[in-house]
Length: 110
Image 1 (spheres, helix red, strand yellow):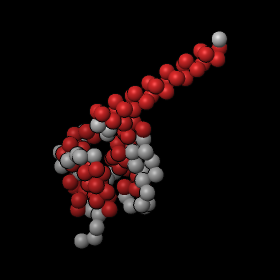
Image 2 (cartoon, rainbow, N blue to C red; image 1 turned 90 degrees about the vertical axis):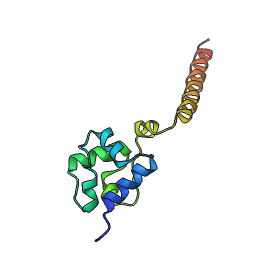
Image 3 (cartoon, rainbow, N blue to C red; image 1 turned 30 degrees about the vertical axis):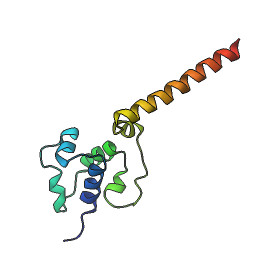
Image 4 (cartoon, rainbow, N blue to C red; image 1 turned 180 degrees about the vertical axis):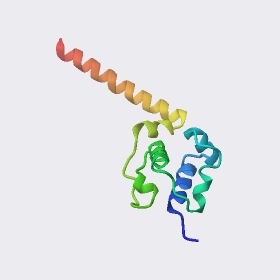
């Protein structure tokens, strides 16, 4: 049986984010075992493919094997998959950046 690029990449993305396929189905509101159907070379609908691509922040072309580079990284998706300490670090950096900009702006106006 030939390799199923879509399922292989989907499974790798889920593993990268420490998710089971069942967890992913719940996150996307897919019926139970919907993703397992793709294991046997069944193709996803365009709508479902776009949902999965958006969820992981990759291109649809990457998921179906038309490119080896995912091309697209959504900031929302990136942030969603950070652990709490990584999120806190980004918060502190952002807070400091905004605070610095505000004080610099006010200093320049005086």
